[in-house]
Amino acid sequence: MDIGEEHKGDITIVEIKGRIDSSTARPLGDKLTELIKAGRKRVVLDLKNLVYISSAGFRALLLASQLAEESQGALVLCSLSSEVQRLFDLGAFTDLFPICSSREESLTKLA
Amino acid sequence: MIAPSSTINFTLVIGNTISEMEKVVARVDQFGAAHGIPNQIINDLNLCLDEILNNTISYGYDDSGSHCIRVTLTLADGVITAEIIDDAKPFDPRQSTPPDASQTLRERRLGGVGLHFVHALMDRVDYVRKDRCNHIKLHKKLYV
Image 1 (cartoon, rainbow over the protein chains, first blue to last red):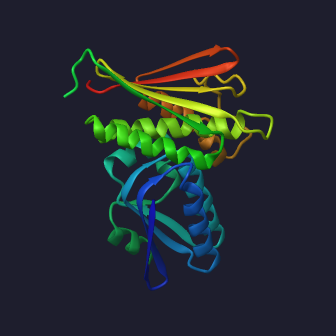
Image 2: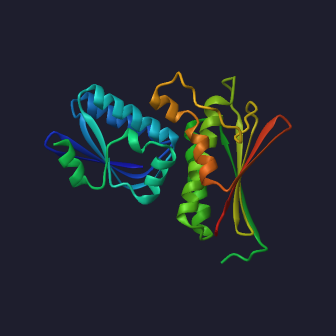
Image 3: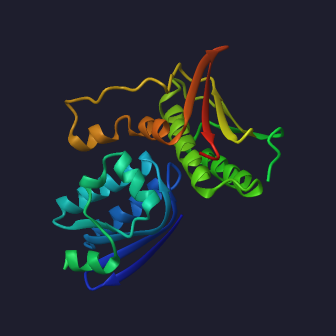
């Protein structure tokens, strides 16, 4: 899994390429925690190039989302493929995260 | 195109640590590419293997010793089958645990979601306890 990072003002865009599973969930969780604790608490997670996510990955996202909210910030997900959206729906996670169809929509939501 | 009567397989043995799991992902990806298996099926299979293996490694052993987990992938008659054999505590993945109402909404969503994915994404899940080992089989048809 590759993690890309870009800043737009005080919003951080984190892009994932690959899969979020038992092997990669911790590095992603650590990255999101590091950003939020450093004050970069408004985060867009761009999942356009996410292949799949397992329950370990969902756990990491839920923890990061919780931390962002406790820090008066937010974690917004965007650009889910239909295959990944299927996993969110299967796990009933769709209503636990703000999900946008694009980066632009995410940036507007966080503005 | 694979002849219907031929069987192709591989077996991989890993240790009982999370860091070993990426070997399974890589080998399954390689197997899928070599035999023209659709990406979606390989991804679903890798996700389900992640759930089963993580569960075994995280909760299956009461000691801190090293244990082997054997993963065999078989492609035959248009069906891909993953068999996981481990000497962990008895665990039947066909049983689902009802949600714990005392947990938070988020905790409740995570508990059991791994097995839910396995049952939703695979066509069939078999289990037998034999010679003090768990034998789990995941089956997925290549073509509907």
